[in-house]
Length: 322
Image (cartoon, rainbow, N blue to C red; front, side, top):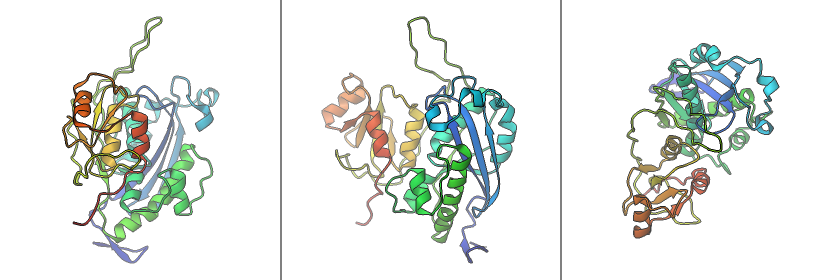
């Protein structure tokens, strides 16, 4: 343990040596959506701000929900393309843990932009402040950034502005990090695996639609949940850490993102369905897939993607005690 001069308390020697608090605003949530602005606050090992950086990014397409992020086509027209800011972005991420609120989303958007540019981002680990707040058992009404900010008395000036959101998160992360260090708590760090290639979606024919497709890495093996399986999900009650969740069929949010969010919440993502499965997530419960058929025969609860997304917002901690 090292001594923290700012708090006169021991500091875990195994903690990272620096952090990059990141926020990106995007044209949407799909695989082919683009980053339109990015901000990075670099913090030292104890969460003190070293510097910050912000840029607009020309997405080479419509800006998406302007009513949310406020960035119009006119505002983005003269902005640099992502390959033009990638080197500066990399310099600010290099050697640091990427910190974000719902870090899976920010990481996936960043990884796709780097893959499009045939580049590799220099970050190897991420930390989600939602997961950290759950580990700290903070008394939050929900896991929105505004609730985390309010808990630590941080004033949010411009929600959905990448620079202000990154500032707010940096200020809220500092006391969270120190609370974790005080108890020598293991930080919820996750590996950042960059995409190895990218293929743009094909242009649809007249009168036809398509689902965006990407070339991803080979199938990955997800880490099992460290918590025991508490059993099946019960309607009207929250999910609990350790529950086994399986997915079937197409989802509007990419499968990797859903799986990573589940893992970060403390759930176990199962590749097959058995009598031990706590919940099946599918948007087509009337399909004849093997997972749906087995779920119905076993009496396994089934919810759609939207309901699962709501449940992920407030996953109950694993049961303790004998």
